[in-house]
Image (tube, rainbow, N blue to C red; front, side):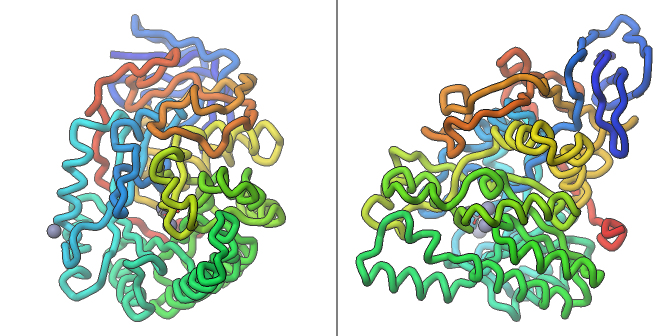
Length: 462
Ligand code: URP
Ligand code: ZN
Ligand code: ZN
Ligand code: ZN
């Protein structure tokens, strides 16, 4: 069965063309001018930008952090699809203490089975380190898990010696270490100090996790990766300007370091904590920063220091569990939603405002995450033979973001009232229309698990 996307502005990896894109079965069969549908469906894309489907490599669906996040793999991937994202890679949460990685992958297969409407992968996440767990990364790789996250804070933080073991092991097997960088001791010290002084409003959340707290951890991780023989390292949710500088320097020295940022750090700032009630919506870590950091992050995207914009979608209801923090910010579950708004916000703030080209947009929202996380060229690119994961973006459509138009299963959006220009109007996964005309067109369970592959990371640095 063929489908023809006709007369669109098609964003290829290195150029943009006006033309047609032919889909046969699940893959892209041809890209060019005056293609024929051979009796198949014709989709008129005049005035539309045709992009590789978004890939969000940082979500926490159905995660249990003592409190369970409210988006599971059905509402999470539905929201993703409405927002122009065709693949997500989720971070598996923790099992009971001592639980092995592979067991937890099985738990996540249970969570995802029959639920997803987009394709999906899973990142392994370390809860603690021993020889067995390190060895298990090999089995995980065979099961399509090519990336593993470690936290340097929270109850499951890893010490430097263990972080080194992880870096070295994953380098050996062609995987990549991803890391949440914040200095745990500083956070605990400052939090305890604020709480003991009765300073418990939302605005003390960012003050207890200042930029230097992230920057120290980024610096340390870069050093550890260097020690492990330039082991591949991916720093999630970069929010501070000095972190961008450190990553830029490391890359200049030939280190295999990649950086991710998120829309919240590009369009929201720490003034959101001024209101002690509303401020709870923005309790996420690292916290929102002073405005001056935003320009540095845009610069990092522009010069290639940061390769990926993902979301860190981790949703808790404002009128529900977020209220745990009403009298004490330290009791508020960390995280905010964003899986549905990433593509329009980045398109609007990036492309529509002239900060990035269409090619750059495709790179940071789709191609680069596909490459770094072992899905390219099956995913992340409009090319013959690749999966027909496609989003049609109307570049002129103006929308004011408000909770009521979104499909995320959470009672607020941090982007309430933000106006965007550019909105996804059709989302296809493997040639199948998943969302069109504001309607979901596939049953739950349509999404497939992606077996991600080992990557030659030094090649990606070129
Ligand atoms: O506050 C956040 N970001 N919660 C989700 C977990 C994480 O740190 O990535
Ligand atoms: Zn277990
Ligand atoms: Zn994190
Ligand atoms: Zn996260």
